[in-house]
Image (tube, rainbow, N blue to C red; front, side):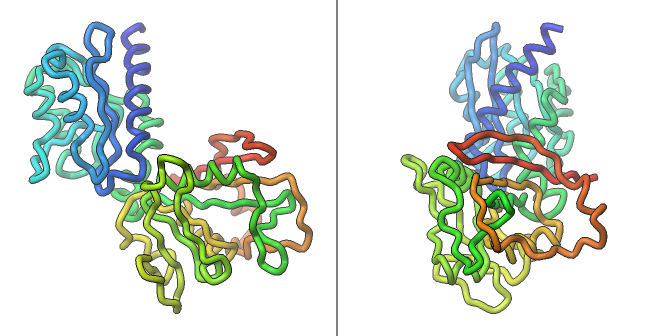
Length: 325
């Protein structure tokens, strides 16, 4: 039982490291790795911006000779294919002399997909799988969604009044929420490769869509315009319909457009995660989300699962994930 508890504990540390690369590692997954020897961490790493070096390579370099005989906790199966950008991580772990590897998830990439685990076992290394697998799926949702659904993982951000308004009747929406909620939204931006608005938001607000948090200014995502007719500003990407996100570079897309843009993504069932910031205000006669084409009210139930809620100053954040078969 103690062994299993240790595995969960150290995999939790690896998952925390994986979060540091969230939204910065595409097309590679944001993996975390911890090397533990004698109950003491001797190396740690996470996938670096742009996808290299991998988490295992960083952790092994930190551990040096202490990697021999250690247990490696890795949030995703170590890769088994060589690349011009670096050697296979399964081989790095073998060469480093680790005694055991604990893997949260098997890699769906067909170049690895079980081959990394098999190679480790063939080298006499004890391999355990499945530790904190559900949390690992959530941590690497962008990478997994790109491979299973061939598109980025989509987060829709909504700032709402108590009566469900996104904006005043005349379209004004600055500011529904307070400073703490807006700061949290900027932190979310820093965790995404891409951020999208529709033409209405672009014309009305000319949004910068940057990250206004000290020290994270360089984490601003690439800007995307959704419009069937308008031309995107210089430096922006452009798509004509929600389904076109499949062609966008990156694994994490944040949608911050107005009601029409939110409705378009919801109607296309392309939203994987909802960030709902609720302000303690009543607007009255407010603009909300237009109809999304549900055939029956019963179709609306059971789609979303509440995974987090917290107070942000006087506002309230609710985080929902889409239930999918």
